[in-house]
Image 1 (tube, helix red, strand yellow):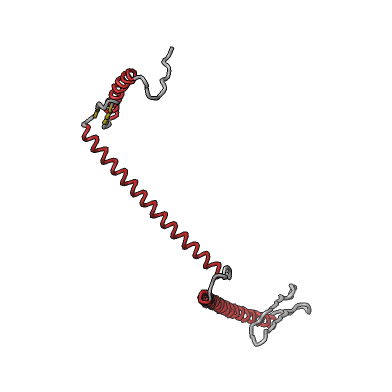
Image 2 (cartoon, one colour):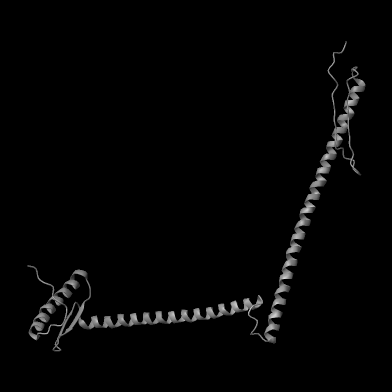
Length: 229
């Protein structure tokens, strides 16, 4: 049969308690020594019996272990204190921000014409002045935006006018070329061979109001005929 589990509670019998203490103290000392050797750890162990007898173990010296423990404990407490102070600081900052948010929300509602029942004449006058100042700023910004848009439209209109002038110039050149072709065609007819009655050249030229730019030109070549020598 295996060993039964021992309940972890105070042993009432003094003799059994002393025997158990002696056995477990030796085992604890052995485990502390093994831990120091196997893991290269600095281990310090202090045990007081129920009769106030001291038992201790240290991998180096108990004094250095205790000093190192006290130093580490102080640093830990300092870090904890700093962390607590930082938490208090942020909590205070959060409270201030919440108050500012509440004030801003209240001001916004008042600017929207809500929750005005608790305001006096001076408060209402101050609120009215704020609204008027805001409106002036909005109107100035609106005028600036409209001015920029008008200037941009004027710039685009100038570019379109320049493009139209260039197009009129090109159309005028084309009209002059068409006139030269028309002149050459009639010159050939006057100095060329006979043509049949059905042979003709038609020309149509449409003039715009106050403009010398031809807008339509149609030319037809004479019908093909067999000429006699």
